[in-house]
Length: 513
Image (tube, rainbow, N blue to C red; front, side):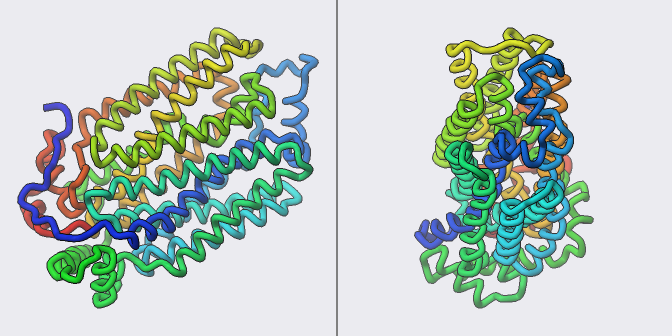
């Protein structure tokens, strides 16, 4: 059978427990780390399309953008192509890549909440530095600090959510992280739209990022760490009390013992990085590497952090481009909410596959419309009807990403790794994600200038590859406890060859972490 198999976790005794208000509130506060990331994604594209911001820091881009004389012969495709402007946008992701490796060790040794707190502090300082920037160097230093914040939060928050959540709603609570990202993007787009014409409005746009950073820092102070992390650091009695609190019952002895057993198994591993490259962890290594890679090559960041610039390039006008970004941001939030209610009902695979097909069709439609109107010369304009149709296809594309590769790109890598390789697996996930976010951010405007409408077909080609990859190689993981994932791989037509039977048996009775 070519497709993935569905694991039911047969033979496992499900522990009793409630879905408690405490768990829900805790996960919402922790997911604020996603709000920081989303706000930055949304705010950057809007700020880089504001006249005042460009005049102060990138005057050549401003002159190029406003040139209507034809003297400079710049096509619509190329008018934002500037290496320094793209460095401002993409430097954050390079810093996040570096930070993710430090964050991996801190998250394991000191706990998830400490890592979230450090991320919030970095983001707070970076936001303020950018808001008060007087030159490009100061701007980019601020972006680097923001990147450290993103690296720490993206390492710790998905782990925190997966470890706190009961298996039957793990998908929904973990997607809270992606929901916060989409809400952050929407808030940023609304703020950009309101502040675009205000004097120094860009300073307020960048500085407001300090607000969610403060919320996360305060939340991290009052949050408790996960039972898994407490046991890992030798705090067993506190872990037992935390487990009772998040399950809403007193009798957690069996589950607690299974968490202790899992921790003891993990301690036998001298080096998680060395371990994860062993053959028996091949599925985890492949998915923690390829899912974030494919997520970036859906082309979503073309829309998200360059949306106002892209819409302005396509002739929407400054205010209209910001408003269009608000619309796509709203669609992003609604579609992510849909995924929260569907991921644990329909499963991960169906959302991946449907999302991939819909994204491909929309990319073909958008590329064809731009090719028809602008051709290779980059000279042309859309009618009002064509603008509305283009916006419809872009919104349909954003929706398909937001209920598939957006949330699942964070959920699946965080739930497939057992404790002994979890920190390394999540670090690989974050670092690959940030590396290719940086690369796409750095070269997108140049690619738009050279590939023109073909850029959308370029990303569409990757969507075809990733959808086929999911169809053949990803088994269904819904409702499967984290420590029983080896039975899923063992049952799969391809991955079974890497998983020894004794590895399945050794984890068969361990409770979800």
